[in-house]
Image 1 (cartoon, one colour):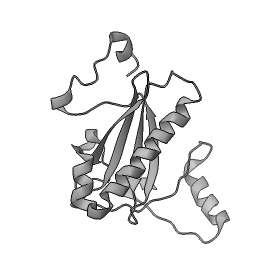
Image 2: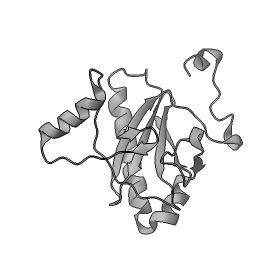
Image 3: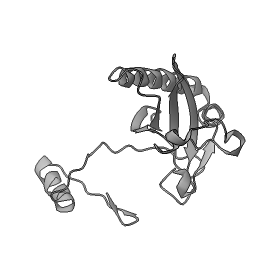
Length: 171
């Protein structure tokens, strides 16, 4: 867990002692506890993969990128100094022979998730983002799902996602 900017760790062999330690910090508040994932770094910095799915009225389209953090940060957020990198190039440069397999898994998982979630309210889900982590064994983990994701794609493509005034109110 985080204590300020410090990561604190605690090891327990019994579920009850784990519960007691967690309870000291959360009290009456509700939290989701998820599995910790050891992720590799590239050039001393962590990264995650952002896949944005956009429904064009007929089918889903995907856009993807890597958010690569700075060496002194444990975050890959763009607002925290992270930078965008092209996914295919990043995978080929750092995961060589696994690049195609990772990309195929991202594609099938992202399209499957978008179709699954869209089925709950057909035609109302127009965009959604999936954030993935790649662990040290090169397995993908879905870390987060965002509706109305930020479409920060760089200056070169700043008009790629034009929005009406009504759309802007949703962001």
